[in-house]
Image 1 (cartoon, rainbow, N blue to C red):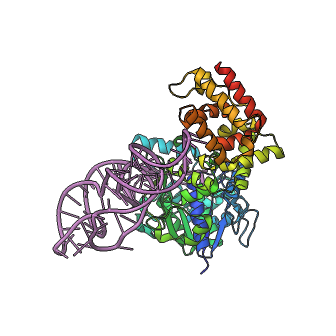
Image 2 (image 1 turned 45 degrees about the vertical axis):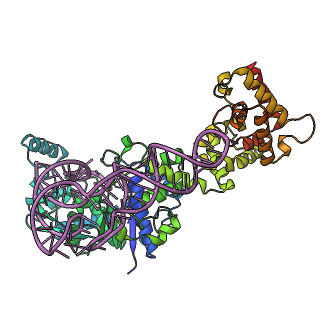
Image 3 (image 1 turned 180 degrees about the vertical axis):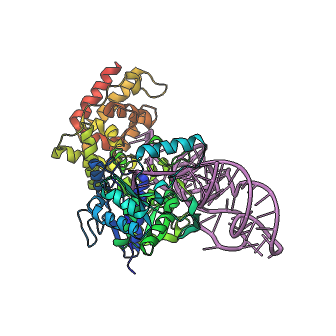
Length: 492
RNA sequence: GGUCCCUUCGUCUAGCGGUUAGGACAGGAGAUUCUCAUUCUUCAAACACGGGUUCGAUUCCCGUAGGGACUACCA
């Protein structure tokens, strides 16, 4: 049987880690088995619908490089893939349930329901609908509905017995029917279906074979099974994925930090790191492997390596993955990744000039292993694209060294780098330059660091910088000279 | 409150009756190095608790405790 799985987000908010993890697992599961991955938009909540959230779904998965075989834009045999375009289907099937006696019209107003909840809470009773309309004779209910009375369709949950289903990970999960939400609404009074109805109907007609979703959905499992049965359909296989938590053990949310993918993107994370890290939340391959490309996961993912327990999202490990994948970038790729961030920082124009691109390409190898985030580059490369940040004279001084002595060192370094005749710094190799500086340090009876330190501050404006010689080449002869002179001037 | 789910280093995890309980991130120490970083070496760090079952339990069963999810005309 052909495996068919889906990711079914509702466009009410930004795509976040939890949702993306679910999407990824479904996607990898399908890919590993040669199955079909479907994207379905569950836009049945008209109150909370947000078109930006829909765009965000496209942006997020576009950025991650995760495509769907069927769904919006790509189409497919089972469309439409927007639930808002399938309302007639849901209405029909809700109606069928009423006809078959599995469902009924409920005329209770939101106000009555609200009052009911209040009194239940006051008495400390369990909450839930009191099934008031369940006993209205069907003919009477139909007549009221036809007279135009506003109503919803509810599912008749059996009053006794229990309903269970088998979860791939957890095993058999069973609930007494009396513990299931008493007669949940299937069709809202606005004619739109609720999640339960739309989900079951679509999964059936889209021929979904496996449902992989977060464990927070476990409680509604029996309800869905009851629905399948009421329709006379066979439920798919279930696999409830472990939850993703914040540091405090609560469901991961905004207050734990960035959770939406758009934030990670803006924060300088690369998609490979997100994919790799998130895939290891509740899944593992063996006892040691950490690094997985998307292609690896498409091949290696399997359900039997899933973990049952919830996983805490660790930003620091993600950070490490981010560094790993940044270091894997070619100069050219890194340059392209960095460009938008440098543009936002105002270091390069929009669009960047070819000179700016050339500089960035040259800078790529010297900052690559220093970046934890793409956003770090702006701070590291400021001195290449503009004058260094102003610094105080004391920044130039090596430990236990005065201004006069430091000025002498800088002057000596200047002479070494730009001799009156012969090859200058830019004509020599790094090895030759280093040898020269070492000899100079010896001559001045000091450490190499005490020569390069002040020079570093002079050229880059900071005691911490990319490798000095390469940095100097990026800055160029004219500016290097000027910056050294400015530093000496600051000292005397 | 009720129902359901979960429980190996701080975190992610390996383990599927007999292991010095392994790896990764983070942390400590050291080496390399022109700063920072990278890299390498190394150290510390866990089977929630109590009962069973068994020759033997981290592993199987049952409790306890702790944590979580759900309990809408939201998904």
